[in-house]
Length: 471
Image (cartoon, rainbow, N blue to C red; front, top):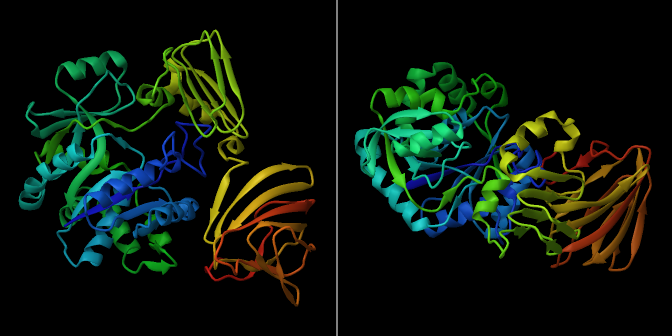
């Protein structure tokens, strides 16, 4: 049995402003009906592999849980207490799957959550070709993608031969375009960041090459705590793990010992690491333009080879070429398509608040809400509560709330009163008043909330009782 491990971390800087720190690219649909995470999970379910283990951080836990719920896909969601890069994350997964399967030699298929694979069958054949060396010889397998262009945004793998299955001679960092072309001419492969390995081999090698990391991760997973749908390692122990990518921590020294093997992968793979990559993959019109996003309102005249991504508003271009135009509810990006790799450094130079979406759908265990608009002294939200779910018993010190039900019905607790609020009815919650909200019906409860007060931050919530265990 193969146990998929999906790495769903990341800070969302390369596809800004559509991707943000609170909603990175693995959760975006990018012109598809499913998000990148959902596409990854769907491929694994179709392959009839074991139930996946998803690793994400605290901030994204409800987004991940909701997207899995939409697929009706059971999964273990393991929460990293903090981001420590890929090597410690894989160690957490190895410990959990050894415990979960009862097999110390469980085979892990480690996958980033945000990659595109056009030919899943070719992908699975490449994975299967690695299994004999992984299971019987204890090798670490990796998937090297057959390059289609001189790409400076990827790392490279130098195989020892041009066979479909070859020992790895070296891992090489992201080159400039000139060196990337030289690598391709010499038979190098793109480093996909996907691995096939045995849990016991990984943990043994980690103990050999990175003992501090191995010890910290073992302590963190000695008694993980179950919290609703989430599994929590010990945060204090995990904080002691050095933050390193698996390539640096383990694969490079193992490759030098001949213990890493690469399978050549030709499956229409891309990590969609920039807007220019998305343009290359997109459906182009006769002028080479790619239009995507939730908005279908675009008007283009005498414009060629542009990428236009919009959420709502009309976007019009006239007489411009080779641009990236990304319009979100609270930010606009216009960039030369050839400089798309520079967006990450651009975002790093912006104020921290610019990397947090202000007008975005926010997920909670009971459903989700959208901030529709806000200004001095007010904020307007649309709140959606799933059937049978409820918002915690709480109070706010600095804001009052007006609730208007627009679909479904609500059971409201306000002070010592409890009552039903039907569609087109409203109620008022004064500042400091104890209150709760429940959806007693079979349909989605949709409600408009108008907040008013001197302070409207999400931290102005004092929870008195919560079925989801939140403080």
